[in-house]
Amino acid sequence: MKNIVCIGGGTGMPRVLTALKPHDVHLSAIVTMADDGGSAGVLREEYGGLPPGDVRRVLVALSDADQSLKDLFLYRFQEGGLKDHVVGNIILKALELKHGSFLQAIKEARKVLQVKGDVIPVTLDYVRLCATFKNGVTVQGEKNISDVEHCTLPIEKIWLDPQATPNPKALEVIEKADMIIVGPGGLYYSLIPNFLVDGISDAVKASKAKKIYIANIKNQIDGFTPEDYAREMKKYIPLDVVLPATVQKDSTTLAHAILTS
Image 1 (tube, rainbow, N blue to C red):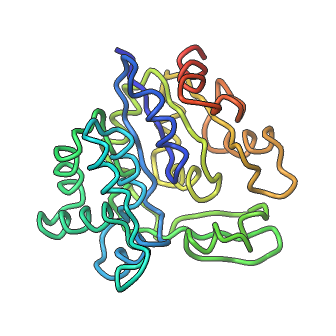
Image 2: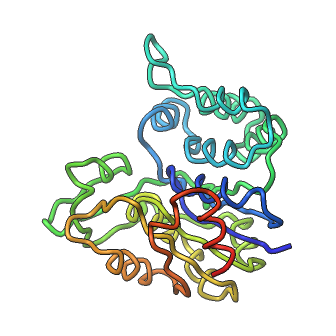
Image 3: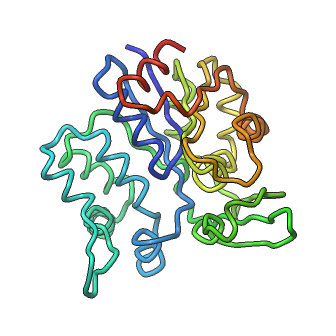
């Protein structure tokens, strides 16, 4: 069985996981911990700990539970005091508070959702993403960096504050990987933050796995071409294959493009 490691966050990586899950592969998802927007950001600020949003999406993508339960984890309140909160985020935070550990919360949620594969926070440190854009403006917070006002501009410098140590499990699965997939996803706020964690880039560079980057369907940065995105990614890790955005036409096409690369 081929070991495939996906690295990313946001809504892109779940599409890849969903496409690959029916195949004879073992999937490990390494998830960014820089998210501080929306429901996950509010829970992070009010209760501390790590943001649950990207983990929740990945758990649902790898779930073999009934669709009704998966839909419940994705349900977003539309009004009232819980407006914009997502049920799955609240459940994960409740499990973390009950068990005293975000990793234990993920473990418990995996049981409930009958998850096939591993869900791994890239770091267990509380971090904030920071960036200086080429217009000279410095912004703190993943949400602020990804806002339309900023995200279409190229970035001059990007970093984590404080600097983060890697989750040992992330290093372990990278070492054992046969294939490593990055993308699709926000270049600066979903993908690159993973490689700002100490040791992650070095582990990918040292890995003998085939390294694949999947281009975004939508151009997020003014003036950037698919080649520009790949060039930026190569500043952090080597790439063996760059797949065009068109492979995301449907799950069958996406899985075939990846597995035959």
